[in-house]
Length: 129
Image 1 (cartoon, rainbow, N blue to C red):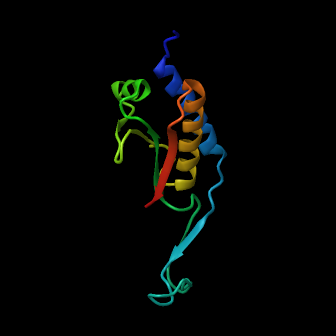
Image 2: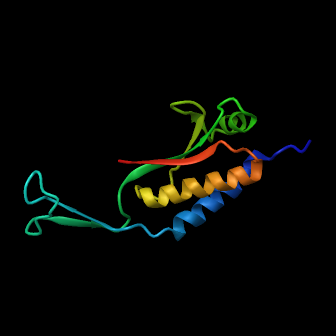
Image 3: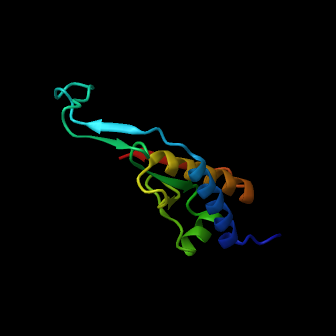
């Protein structure tokens, strides 16, 4: 049986994630004070900001089950920690606060990791901040 080099697998997955994050084109977001507390309209007479990188958020890769050979190897390498709801998670620290870029990274990383390991329960996940 072939032994997997998990450090090399991580490097390949990370490269796929970086490429996806760079290729991603976030939708810019304008933020500012509303005309009233219940309004979706921005009062342009007050300070407004254009966020070129889009909405802010977090992303991670979840590997299940948390006691699988892959999950244990990632924990041993210091790449993953126990995840809420089971499994382990690999945090996406790249691309600042851009949820679009972070999500692209997480999904590409997870796809490459499934491809290289044959494991199926690997997911890219994210949430808005």
